[in-house]
Image (tube, rainbow, N blue to C red; front, top):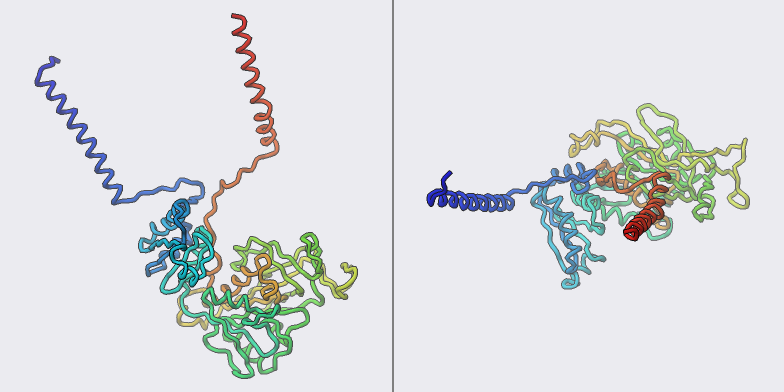
Length: 459
């Protein structure tokens, strides 16, 4: 082709047109990137995406959510908070994130009880929850608690020496009662001798280790409450059943004589022989998220004989090294073969359910609300002020209350886990890697150096 002035101008115009169009396309893509967001999570286990449970919860929240972060001018910390909250904002755009420097607003920090840098405050419909752990599980659980609909009244029976949900003595449940209040549950005491009926707003009746027997009329009231589909938590102690043998028979429960002795506790430095450790749990909504051991001081073993209409399963069991000690708890204590003592594993708590048609109108459409629930434990000390802080006792107690109140969604939500967080190598692989880097690689480098040196020397 002959190159003329005309063809040269044409080629230049084509070149300039291409550059202009190319730059225009880049500018258009840049503008589109500000208008639309497209993200893909390619990590194993989708660790940078919300779990299905979290997304389902956000779909149920109809009102805006405000998340306040009390973080100092630490860009690394604030970036971490923004990244975590952004996952929620992508699914629910009306979530607002605010930052407050605690050094500039000390009075507000003191009023809200903020104790750590980076603490979050999740607010929904006027209710708020503190979050001290930057994780999806912590934020989602806080949203669950603020989204709790309606009032859940928990009535603690009183008048028979029961553990007081507001008391501060070691055997009382004051600390646990305060935790229930922080979770949005209402706590009240109920003396049947003063008010011989269980209030209609009671979602759960708690009988916490009565020291004197209930009167026959009170037993009838409790029995009628169960007949009408009421939920019950019965905390017993060895040989202290409050005269409620009729209720035990109603459920098909019996109590084995003696106190459970767990030889495993000595491995953890616990010298008291009647302490029981529970490190493993069955598949049940109450225990599905428990990862730590629970401790039960001075407990008795339970047995269940199936009753028509009730479905039951052991909720907590001792280990195989435990047994029921019927002798004095002093001196050399050992299992007596051939006696009435029973060897472990032993059941120390049962969970019962049965279908019930008298669901309240607010929950009439919920299949869960049509299920009556009862839990009986052979120990009431595990949520007392003296032992609430041991292991996962607090988490277990809160999960029991949520499940018995038909609030399954408020039992700790499962966080998304990644399958590649740990690398497990066989002994052979570890030996190959260790010997390779300690000996093979250095010797190889040394040998190559000697070889090159010898070749150069021969030249």
